[in-house]
Image (cartoon, rainbow, N blue to C red; front, side, top):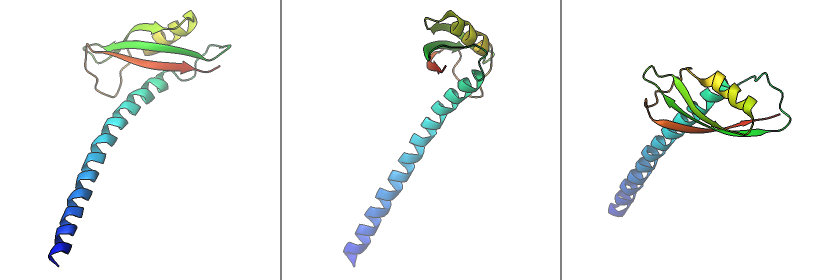
Length: 111
């Protein structure tokens, strides 16, 4: 009987530790997805015709008014670069990012 109670306590501790650890990981993943989703929504419905899929790396920062300031758009297509800058510059994100810190987001536009 003594061994059974020790096993039950050990199982409860193990199970409780795993649940609390899993909850922390989920919160971090949701924050990353949320920023990507916000940027994707700002770039929806482009009014440009693309001949092929284009990838770009967007480097931006957040100013003191919590607005996006695009620093660079690493792509060979100048039209896509202008489109991304015009859609993202001075837009506000719902996520509170650190002002002054640089962020890099990959963007893929499909034809």
